[in-house]
Length: 490
Image (cartoon, rainbow, N blue to C red):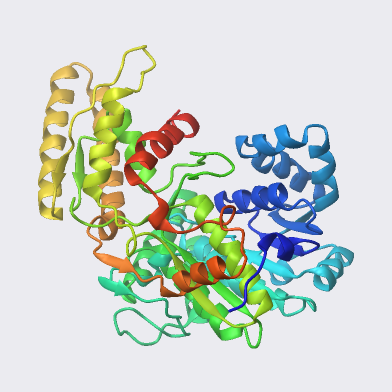
């Protein structure tokens, strides 16, 4: 493939970003504005009823974040001018046809001007309601592709998925596409429209039964997990994202489409500054719980690989792929991760966490440092269940001794304890596949993209995405964990 300056490619381009309030979307937006302020226009599709609510989301959920502080310092008073000149807010909703655009004039403007569409809209909750996940991750992808077909100047559509659409497979996992009806376990009959009808039928049934809001929520979550596992996927997120890829593959026609599959996305390595993070993301939930002294037991294999990749590297890969395929229209899947070229293991994470929080203990609300120790690691579900059962009995006995004179209080405490145990077991069941995951994500296409970038005049100092460049010890000890503490610990 032919490649040249990415800055030159971005010059005078119009880009539509769907899911603009998301973690990667914000980093992408900041990067473009910072390195190429001469981009022509950035349409930001925001889930909002009108321009007023979209503007509120822009200021509170995007440019009001610390992520943009470097750009604000660089531009000073000109920052607001850049925002008003380059950003166009698009109130809409990808779960609707035509992306939910009510303003026909704005819709025509987007369709006539857009060079690139980047779809980053998704729910990443592993245990999401099926109706919500299906609307966003699957039918949202369908609506974006359908809309893209009306964009007369479109050069490429970048659809961001996840490497974990592979399910629980081990070995080398290739950058291969999914097609309608595919499953991971050989079960036939997966029909996306039928899945939607199943959801609507279940919702109607629950309404007729007078189910409460909580009952509907749990029924939708349970249905999602059951349907995912029926076809070989471990959770709702990866199942609905895989179906999203199927839809894109089926509907794209002659449209140049790039599918980017990142692994576990972590805080920024370098840009706009090291360690920026937002939200409790996968492995970060372990770091938060551990640093606060609440994680004493861990289920998993410490020798298993854990594939993480800094967010700025994912964004750089997206930008380089975007430019490459706009110049040479064809389709490609890019898995962006580290397990093949610079492997990290859970053992490393345990060691880094212990060292960091021993040297930099979290101070609790009483002003006392939290002492951490090495976590008890159990390597199978049977051992974990026994561990939780013993803790349950001990805590129950403590409640009984403390509350013999307060029966109602004892009952309430017992119910709360039981609820927490059930939540923990459900989460463990959902995350278990990744704690014993032995696959490595092939990134041959991504490596070819890196080679083309090195040989083709790309500004590789600005658009770096080679995991070999990461020193994991330095990254976790001096960048990622400090970033989690600064931006996520509450």
